Length: 425
View 1 (cartoon, rainbow, N blue to C red):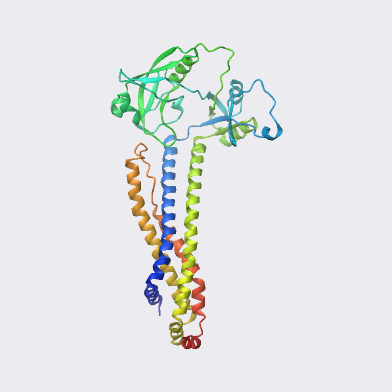
View 2 (cartoon, rainbow, N blue to C red):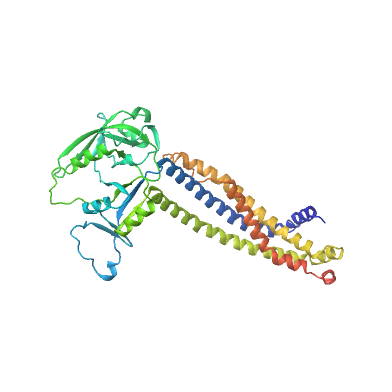
């Protein structure tokens, strides 16, 4: 018998016991189905994050935060530093330190850093357009440092003295700005209270409309609007009250090495992260979730492997006389081994191919529904993306697992003594 004859015989033998084979295939189906879906989630989210990183680009800046010494929890309170910010936040194992002005000045002096802008917290009371109603609009300071994923308009210009703002697409309707193209060029009025509770108003021109993303929402202000609103907020503030900052944005000098600057910041008690670092943390969380889901799928495949062993061992026992007859007619042990191995591989192929096929069909439908409903404000995000290479790899891996599971029954069949097998009752 040549290989094709062996393959045809193996396929035919697989369906001799339909119930036993079906139960084994179902177990493989569950594992392959789960792994295919979780792999698609990882691919979909990963591709979206890569797209976001590409749209932001290399900003040449680091987000600098204060490193909090957690060792004081064991050794007692740390010594008071009059120049350091007294504000910090402790949330379980995580600690967040605020930057004082002296910290900002220290960061400016680190080799490789050209300039530092503290992260200012802007707190507008409301925003209004031409009497269409007052709405709460969160505003991010110095948003011109990042390149927004624009639906219309232009990026914020930090070199101009004019107040500029970029709005997300889902803010336009309530504010009465119309479509994204119609909103560009219109002026918004922002109200903000000063330190004494007096209201100040500022106007800003909408220069762009951005698509929403996973990494932040709300409106963005350029440097001019940031400085104007910060000045309004701090009007009437006593000189004795120091200002603290949650973080600062440090721009690197041309030719400066990011790892070297990070190392220098770390030695001085600061942490520096690029945009890619921050988005990479998000990807790590997604990979962790996908890994846990894959682990459950692997358990199902291991259980299916024992099902294959049981199925083929029983098949070997039931076909003992048949094996003896094949060997008596000249079929060698190697071909008998190949025959039963092919049966195992075919069972693995059936389960994995059906599981992957159902996962692709179901997952594509779910992804399209989510993209048009829950995720409609995140254009470009397909939560489930099925890469052909990943699907093929999953099928091949499952077939290999099936081959390994079929090794023991195949060896037992190959070692059958033809005379004793023919006498078997």
